[in-house]
Length: 316
Image (cartoon, rainbow, N blue to C red; front, side):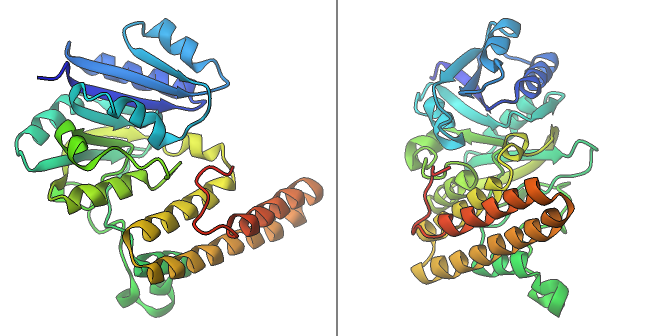
């Protein structure tokens, strides 16, 4: 038997108040004696770690000297092999009611469930389309070029399954990393997160390996959390688009054919160039110097970023 039944991992990068709110929601609703709460701080500059230790002395706070990324930060805890289950919980979330306990009960109800996710809401309480299908070349082309709008619904590739309102349980391909509950048995079999995915895409690759190993990845509306969404990523500005593109390309390089990887690379290059042009047109005209320089920097980053093959995981 492991030391803990559940370990909750929260990775923080300059989101102090959001993490404090998240921790408050966990402790206000339910906490078990054999649960472990760990916050991994990726060298935040807002005195986050001090605040966490002061307000919640019973939790464990890991202080990293650098921003090592989402995957590597989680892996620091996943490597320990000291818990029956691990929950990846984003820093910009808060849990509602006893969703953690209900999630544990649910995943334990079927020994074939390797990973599960719950219902996720936006801040206005509308449904967030977490969980998805694995990305394909078709789905990425549709997202970038909007074929369904140009040529009709038959070209639509609904990777996010937007016709499903997350009101029923279903086996899925990918559970989003904002709330991902996983068995330690699965981790011991398929390994930890791939740290080559610095930010974005790590849970997609993980779920791909997990499903390939025969485990079920399950969604169930046993409870709800609120996910504000990408607060750390927003601090990256235009770099967010570039890092997301890199993660998509890396997934195809690793899990699809080389031809598909080359084609999706071209698709994402077109996406980033178009975004750069929008920045130049929209902001360069309105606020001449500041935004024009910013848009030009974005375009330069696009060109520099796409020189590398495969994409650089940490080059920002």
